[in-house]
Image (cartoon, rainbow, N blue to C red; front, side, top):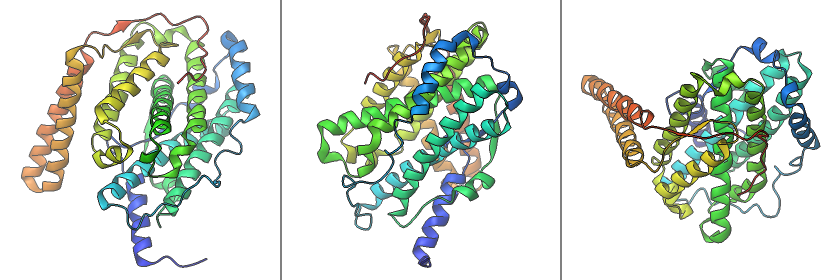
Length: 357
């Protein structure tokens, strides 16, 4: 094994630090009440459940996450520095999100005794491990990478009740599908903007995300209380949180989206639209994104996070005060988005969907 150069070693440390960082915008590692999840009875959705598990068991993407002749060489060394930084940030963030799912699902399988639940989480952990490993291979081409074993031990874990895991992870998987397929379809029409070969793998890849979301839709379907009563308020909270986080995170990557030939405002709203249409399969409400307050609220939220970042870089007492004030502005912007009246919807009797985009 060749020793790392000092530059490679420094880059590797930076990448590990990026993946390890825990902020409002970074992907998190989660833990939950695994005993409660182990008690889930899938009998109410048995027919749909067995169809989904059979699909996962067939492992349609078994041979997908391998480099082929379609994998073009990337000139990382001569890439415009700003684009390189944002591309690496995108890959590290994506890897961390994928590996977060792998760790959570693997732990559920390890701790559980419920055959249905353990089988499901075993398949999902398998898929997410492939995704994370494939991204890490792409990062290694740039002379960097993330030490996944180190990350498992070093990353802070956030405890969520099982129902919050369902809401957050369902949306994470479905919005992941919407993001990947929107980029893939755009680059199908405009291949001149495909500055990295990993985007060629997004079509089949995003179908894994879709099927994982289907699994969480069925888990929520087993208990009607999860999508009714006060839990509607939590569903709305997670919708606003996931959409708002995406808006802020994407607007911090202008060079990345410019290189793809994508207008960030259009892209995010298109992903929100797709995710909203999909989530009608299980959620009894949707956000009113036609309301003028929606766009203004997202812009206020982004402005607040930009101010927080500037204050953080400023440091000192002035920086701390500025960060606190900007945090308060972000909280008010989030509250404004949350208080926009939502639209009611009626989920179908059979929540199963197939990728349609």
